[in-house]
Amino acid sequence: MTLQGVIFDMDGVLVDSEPFGFEAMRRVMARYGLPYGEEENAEFLGRTTLDSCRILRARHRLPESEVTLADWYVEAMLEQIARGPIPMAGVPEVLRGVRGAGYRLALASSAEVRVIDANLAALAIRPLFEAVVSGTQVARGKPDPDVFLAAAERLGVPAAACLVVEDSRNGLLAAKAAGMRCAVVPCAHTLHQEFGEADHRIAALPELLPLLT
Image (cartoon, rainbow, N blue to C red; front, side, top):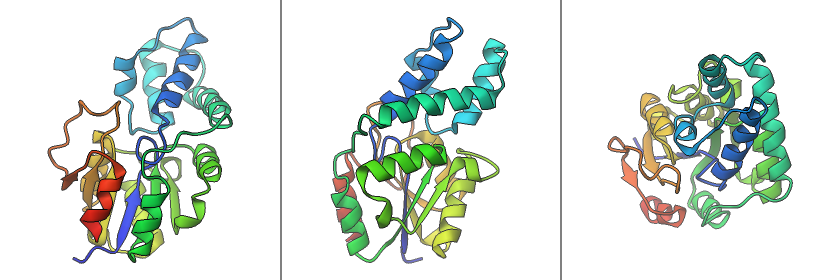
């Protein structure tokens, strides 16, 4: 089927927010005097904050609910974003180029709505997307396909006519489960992950345009 829509992940694809996310969760765990390292953090890349907090709560037998833990995380994220998000190479030029080539754009992120809105506003790229979906707005987060299917539905584009741009294995698995093509652009924190099922692998976002034009 002819490609009609391009669905972008946000963290690690459009915004270099993985360091922010790591720091935010480190602060949450520090409230309990618990360490939080890169290895544990890698387990949660691509997952919703609530899913991550649910796992951490059970693993460390934390007294607060996963909802409270997620709220603390979001507060720490917003504090960092307020100081200025770091756009990935090619943002916003690649987004404008993809849209200019006639494709319909959506964003599908595991992040909370407030975090998505803060990043898109700070980077002034919200008008480029016809649809924006948070993993908190669907029944199941990545690696399940719900967030991508919701994005395609809001665009009015069949799943088979969508290309997902992702940086994590959880995101790749979600895209393939949705019946979509996927181009992976690993960030520094996901380079070690397995992306064998991807349709394309690119080193940086500007390499996406030649695939589409």
